Image (cartoon, rainbow over all chains, first blue to last red):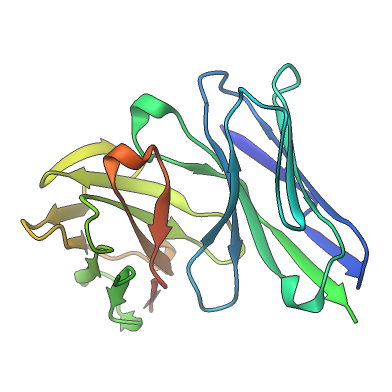
Length: 113
Length: 113
């Protein structure tokens, strides 16, 4: 059973546009929700993360929106740039389960100049 | 501060062989997790090591085993390689007290022929 479902699989956005990636989770015990950015040939790099006690977290052009009742969270990239073109993964974990992360299947973002 | 490093970068093995992958944690980190990332998929948790002991395991068979050394570096061993073991193997380190934030290495690309 897939613990975290991510959509869309791929996304094409024009430069300056807003990129939106969505994730849904099953386990209500999850309490840490990070987003990772991965470039080809590299390992995932932490982009931004949120805990369920807040509904939104913003860092620069990146915002996480969190809906605890719907068990959904999303990543918004404002003013998308060609340098943002990468694969994005959402993930979830539980505090008492150390770092056993459950990852979504990834979204390949292509920002057109 | 030194980041997470992994070796080798690429590796080609044949079915039935054994392989050892290595990971050096980020300075000061005492927890290491290993993930398998198949092409086009999100990382899948293999296991985690803390204080030289396995501290959680994902849905992987016993032929996947590991070690953590006193300097917190780690090895992933895979016996009786199968074609489906071809993947990018990622190592991630963290400091337990940092509450789940983990840092990934660049990975080892394993190809099984």
